[in-house]
Image 1 (spheres, rainbow, N blue to C red):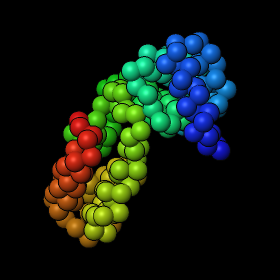
Image 2: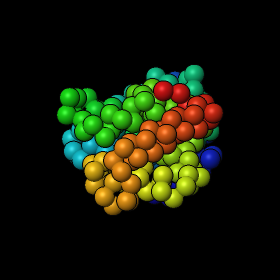
Image 3: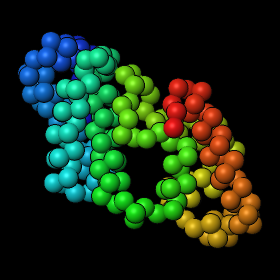
Length: 186
């Protein structure tokens, strides 16, 4: 989607600050399709995605003010993403794979409000992984993106299963410190 201008974004934020109901209509006009695409990609359920988008509009109404985001597109996208993830987590409670539970110690609760103007969490993760050595990066991606079991990672990398566990643990701890230095806390 083509990014909207800063002027359009500021204009809609101004409507929120004035508590004008037109803010929601303008948000839907400018970003509704984007928010729906984000929610649909995460939930894989069109009905649930629509609910998430409606919840996003309500969340923006409740958060602006006091929040005054520089980019409503980025801020609203983060809210939509966080709400979609929270809904998926709630619907799959008790069914989450162990691999995702391992990351709970690193990543903040996505139901919390994303700070205005904050860099996307995915961008932080990308920057962190780019700075890691190749083997740590490969092991991390295999485990948390491809959801490979530890024994398969060990087999593919030539490491022992214990070495894979240790490397993952150290990488998660480094990632946590990296995020905390950037003001993102669990």
